[in-house]
Image (tube, rainbow, N blue to C red; front, side, top):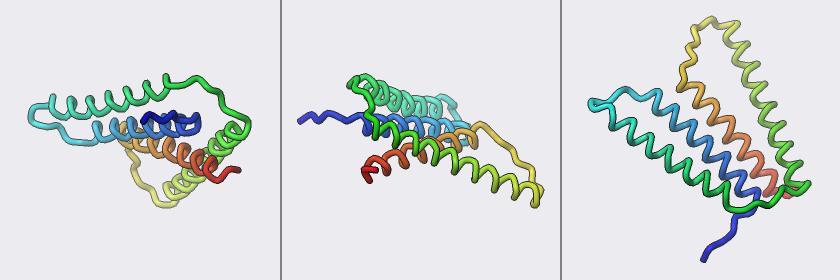
Length: 133
């Protein structure tokens, strides 16, 4: 039996899958090279390809529009995510100011941070939608 996904579930799925893609890229960047290098690239590349295919199928399933309540919940979750990002950056800035340390932002760390941001936004949007506010 095939069930149709509503629009909020579609948005949540897209954000979760894009967070998983950034997390997979972070894993690709942080893992050491394997003996035949094609194994690591092929495995993670296939995983990213499957995630992209699921995302494209999810995007193309239906064409409905967000209602006003869902749009307000989307804006609230965006503001909540932005607030948490600002607080996180402020705390990290204060810690780095008082405890000098060399921070090395590699592409893996940036990918992990992007994944956390997307999953935080998706989960706050989903929780606001489930609470019905």
